[in-house]
Image (cartoon, helix red, strand yellow):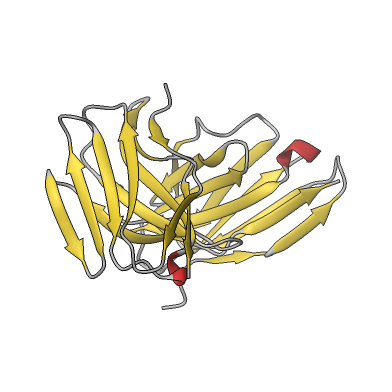
Length: 113
Length: 113
């Protein structure tokens, strides 16, 4: 099993640019989660999907953030326009059941200049 | 009050000693509890989960849960330098109509030879 796959691993962009982060969950997992980790705020849940449907997006910081899951094997997190305070590591995780063990991808380190 | 609280550390222990990591949570209805280990620059990985009061042992790791006191701990016996990492406590928390996995800020453990 390849595990959760994320791309890119590193992204450096300038303020105002659009950023798209990608995630491929573990095959057969019905739940997909997007997290953001910073030194100040720790690991925060942004949004999660069940069977490709967004269930809870209350953690999405503002309208500049959007997430989609067009099929069971792919999800995107988009930031438009990006700001320096968006700099963080963004993790994608998946699980077969909502309250079960979550498996994390390697993360995308985003730097917005 | 934060939903999941941990001492940020660093907790420094000598090699071979027992490391004790503690976590308290605010939601009395929480049923599922997890300990994740995160090496610097890496993604969180699950070490233990516990659902019932008492102790659960897995190799050198023991998770302890006391729901009455809303307290969960992780003991690492015979600590090794390779155990040096940040340990994240996570709790399933019911909020806004959904179950979410809420992470503590993590405790940094340093095992010195």
